[in-house]
Image (cartoon, rainbow, N blue to C red; front, side, top):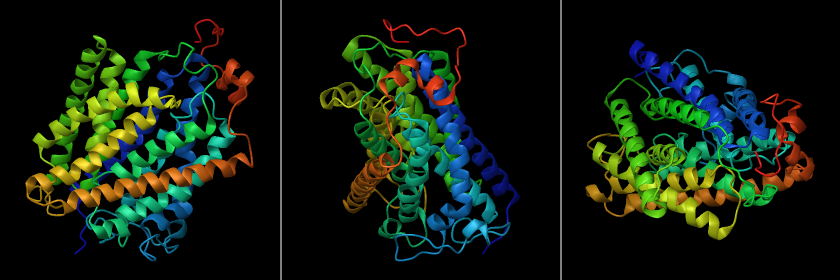
Length: 420
């Protein structure tokens, strides 16, 4: 039965706006983390994703991701250019809100995912290459994954994978793709030697706060209505984010005998990533544990794994989104509680056996292999069209000036000694 609900419509409209806010928030977050000469370039990449992905999603992206299934692998062109996507509900996805509103909500996820990846190649990926990357990555990676996990008939959905708001489609996909992109594009000039701590911590805090604020819509909106599952997702989101901040800072204190502001924000983001696939399926107590563990393991991944392997993931996209998303996806199979959400299942801890964990592990492995492999080929293909990496001179002068002929700080003069 499909009956429009004013309450559900109001709720999902609000959630859609909150999720949109996350991408400008990400621009501030990333902008504060890079050096002064690259602020505008990294922020522009988030805004470019807003423009380009919106057009892709309208023309064919939404139809291929959520349209009628073909072989459990991809949708159809039935809704090309939003043909048939109007003000009546679609009972397969959201029976109480207009189909067009469901489209808009999903659009916001499609926008922020490639924007997240930009952090891995910050300060050296040329803007023309980024534009082509968003076009091809969104088409060849995000759209098929979204159909597999969320689309009616998608093969991972049919297997029973639980992903409430994007642990695989958004978080793992962006994290793994970011790692591959960082390896393919190569290290920043003087990476590892040049002083490159965040140049503007107030923007990092403000952007991180906007991300947390938007995450309530990101997770709770997955309930597709103003209902108890949405309330559960709101609660688990807040609880996990707070626990992750504590988990990160505790491990940081044990390791370095210091608690940094940057670490506290990073721990919060790590936990919000981890709770994303589980938000509407687990209890508040489980959310506390998931968030706390996420903060700790993401700190350890960045502090040790990144150093040992020597890759230059500039803004730690893999360490936070890849590792956090992996833990959260597996934890969903451990802690899911059918009594809280009839569309879920019981995880291992609640008597569901080992099968839910194995299904979640399969989703993790598939996402790693598919997103990682396709990202490699996408970047190699783009390199045949235009250079990926800014030259040494362009990096020294900054991507703001060399890519956009603008400067975030008009009175700024580059100082090679401190590397600002």
